[in-house]
Image (cartoon, rainbow, N blue to C red; front, side, top):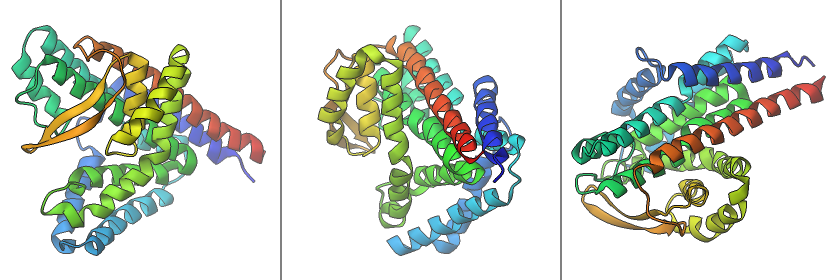
Amino acid sequence: MSTRPYTRRAAGLLAGYLADRVLGDPRRLHPVAGFGCTAAALEKLTYRPTRVAGAAHVCLLVGAVAFAGRLLPRHTVVVAAATWTVLGGRSLEREALAVHDLLARGDLDGARVRVRNLVGRDTSGLDAGQVARAAVESVAENGSDAVVAPLFWGALAGTPGLLAHRAINTLDAIIGHHTPRYEQFGWAAAKLDDLANWPAARVSVLCTMLVQPHRVPAIVTTVRRDAPAHPSPNAGPVESAYAAALGVRLGGTNSYHGAVEHRGVLGDGRAVAPDDLLRVVRLHRRVCGAALAMSVAASLGVSALRS
């Protein structure tokens, strides 16, 4: 059996990752925006306040995207383009650093507004440390969801895996909310997103340990002890690992749409400070680099086994 699809996959993942590092998200005509418009148009036809309707909506969209990915040629440039399209690592860093710069200038009001690009919580009453904590938590969670997970599914399933994962992630962002409209209709999107990101979250924890070997005991202890207190089965382990790696405390009390939510505290270090945003961006880059190396190695390993 030919090994070329797997070597092309490895090369495409690497090239797409580098494109995201250098160029960031495509500025115009982003395919994800087009997918969002398509999902919104379809929702007008499929919406019912039931889980069955939501599941059908998700299956139609994710299935169509995966099928389209299956029809594309398995060339390096196609995998690279798909990888670049779905990754969000550079834009995540850009937002975190923008929040840091605003806090460093003493512009707390501006930082409160800017951090809304990263989190869904209420930010109007946050102090500088709480704004920084929100951004650190977002870098940890979204680094896993927007970089590690796509690389994982790209290595496992090529272009269809890359595109299907991004479709799932986007649908969760659109309808996977606990609101009156989406409590039932968005249930399938939220659960499928949890399932799709479950393995990548554990890979993220592993990568955090690989790039911070001197913090491995603290990471293992913190993940085991604190991750179950987080309402997300994936954000909990990742944020716990980052908290231990950085020596800070994450989690705690947040407000969402006026409702206060008390989450468990992750880590037993000091409170987050604005300069920790610089540290978390450096950690994020190293974790994502480790995930890339693992994904490329996995694809090349399959190629070697099939040769």
